[in-house]
Structure formats: structure tokens, C-alpha cells
Image 1 (cartoon, helix red, strand yellow):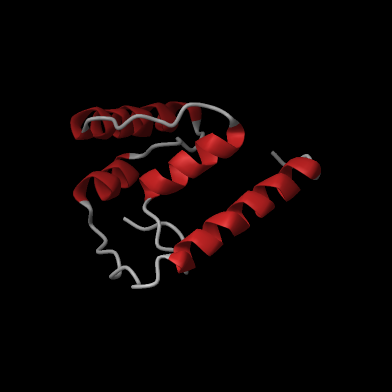
Image 2 (cartoon, helix red, strand yellow):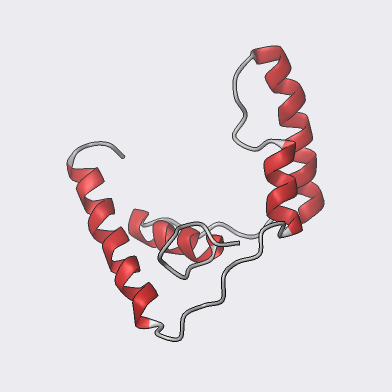
Length: 100
């Protein structure tokens, strides 16, 4: 699954880049059944709390099923690297503005 338009980066690659920028360990993969169970439990809890859950059953299903086919990667891999550098600049700006 691809997350951002214009850059050829998977969700896992974006998570790794953001973890590096934040200075924390990159998240590990979670088994599909755990993510789906968490989504279902969060859905039921949200009915009681009336707060939107971070992970819903629908989001978990989308992530686990690979329900969206990513576009073919571009031949020029430097294209994605340039966008990754932009993420770094954007991240620093968000920190300076105290938005993170």
C-alpha cells in the first residue's frame, strides 16, 4: 500500500523514515489477526466512549488485505529520494512551529 502521492514509498518505509526523524525505534510488524482483533475491539469501545478509535475494523481490513493496488514504481528511484528529503524539511518546520 502506498501512502503519499508523488513519492514511491510504502507505509512501512514512511514509518521507518518518521521514526528516524523522531529519534525512536521503527515500529514492528503486527500479525494480521492481532490488528483485526484490535480493530474490532476498538469499534466496540468507541460505541461506549463515543470517541473515534485510532484503529478501526475497516482500517485493519484495508491494511491487512492489501485492498489497494499500488502504482508501478517509477524507474527513476531518485524521484522518491527527493520527496523523502522534503519530508525531512517539512518535519523540521513542524517541530519549529511546535506543531509536533
